[in-house]
Length: 607
Ligand code: F6R
Image 1: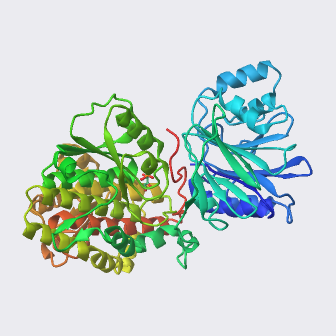
Image 2: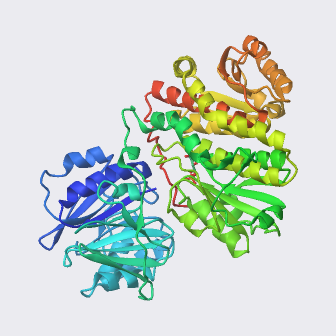
Image 3: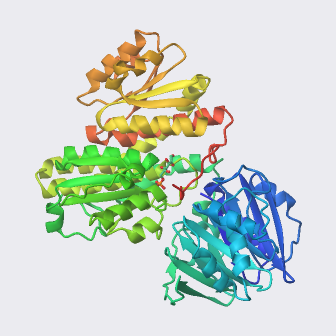
């Protein structure tokens, strides 16, 4: 959600800023801008549109060695050139980029307007530039400190002043900010991808911290100007991982990376000899794990669907009562933290504010919250009480795919270890473990059917509505299939438990509304087949994802995608991949921008 970057050093700033913004574009892509300092003046270029539109209007050889940049996901004010960041104060000497929401901006704006300040934009962010300008008396850091003292809300800010070349000030409260430490150059960014082409040495800022950066070094302090010593971390992602690497877009690359990313998530965590799993980093002794009486999972979007699958797993495998809940709901309902409950915050980005704030609320009430995250060094894993990295590698496409299957794998490993500590036999553990180890190769087999799935997607891409139906552990997978389709193709899609359709949604069925059924060979297969027949009886078209050799389903459905057979608890891995491909090829057929679907952004750092 909004990408920000700052640079000071010996390179051409506009080149570095544009390169960084291109990498950050997945965080927001409705407008963009840069501000570069040269000869004690700030030069701003900004426009509605993508980074390529901005690039087209930035003059060649735009001079200047320090500056800031922004790619926007609009919250306050329509998408246009004027509302694009950076924003300046009345003098034009202060420029800021901001990610987050200033909740009291209207009060501050009214006051500043009464004092004679003229505002040019409808944004909440412009108020920050005016405040800093008001407080400025020759020291930008001091002015920023005073200004943010008045702000209520969330922010990651980077600010420059025309009179203080090669200096930038960053401040963080609720929106991520990372410092990149290079040779004779420094970076600020909303995530590490912004600076990875130049440095892998980074410092993660915490909420309530201010950083004063020059091309020579940096100083970190709290809001009361007490110095804070920070450690420099090394990022181990490779630049190639954030590039398309021969694929037409990131989403396809990430879908096809899944055999490898699932393997990476399992690597070193399965114990064949004892038929169990081991997750380092949980910070819990075996005794504490044995005392867990309940598992509660909080997350948003796709990560929530992974959490729902996990709640089935914890109950079926480990016989521990478990539930998943939307993080955005948990935070505001004064949650009750029960003794011996173990919480998980699941998040690909590790920055989703709904999940982060719910986690903090639970921790305030004494809960132990573990993180299941992808982005190393992001806020949720840093603030959680322990947890697991899923090691999917960078996920750049806005629609989450490979993170989902790796989140599942992390939970399977955890559930297996909890089950084996309790009453699961060695033999059952082994059967599951063997099934888990086979998943990457089975995913390869599903991916090999890409052409058939593409043809199917093209056949149905003119539908205006879709139902996705599954039961048991595959019900959340149906929800995930519907979410994928709607977010990247803009076709209206609903996910339901197949049993629920007769309680209402079946009224939607006609020849133009296809239903996609998930039909594993589990104990609910017969029931799902009955639900398919109910749809067929009403002239509805049925697409099924069924297990190889299931001729009965093949005969009933209009079209069938066959997947390999696995343990009944492991089907979510194999069921979701065809749904990702189906959504992907449908969106392509409709000419959508699959990596950057309309109105969305990766890493949702606003409430
Ligand atoms: C859907 C999608 C979103 C995210 C959600 C949570 O494809 O990507 O629904 O899953 O915004 O994001 P994380 O996992 O980063 O917390």
